[in-house]
Length: 270
Image (cartoon, rainbow, N blue to C red; front, side, top):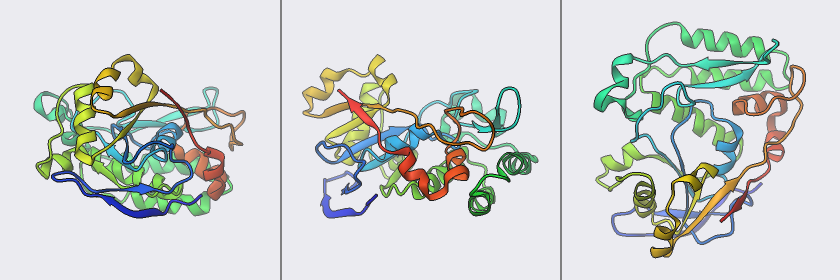
């Protein structure tokens, strides 16, 4: 699948210039198309597929951290009655309260969790067809020496984009704000401020956005609002019958470069 950017740029005063993706998975709406989500750890395939729908991905790390959610954990397949386990990143409790509870300010706790994760991944996927290719790359990501959860998650997200041939820029909102570009508000207003930051004409939301986004405000600003409709692919897994909604690394270990075609592309609805 081609992911080459067109040469044209959208140069807008006090906004980030965004190119138009030539990816065949991009949805056919006016550019720039913005896709956004909180930075998740080892995200699932729906997260990855949504990125390919647009021209730019914003990782929303300037909002509150959500406890016991995918921002610091995700699933991998194992041999067991349940068929999967959580890989969980331990966090510094004091950074989960007050002003520090923003995702961008959450810190990773010290300990042996990296070694434990890698042992679990190796145990789970050592017999997978593409273990020898993928495992060293995962090991390298775990060499991260910082303590920022958002930074660590971003490493995995950009790695996933590379493996699934998604060649669009990804920005964290905390970094955009540091450039004195306004990203503020709640729900609809927050999304609209992100759209303004990159000059977006179209915004791709997950299906949950239907419950809170105010479509009329997008219409007022002559912007398109669409919702991802993701159909999870079924593929051969190393352990038993297929279980959906694992981390993206599950597909990579089992199918390597064929993962791009297996993932396919997302549909959308207005």
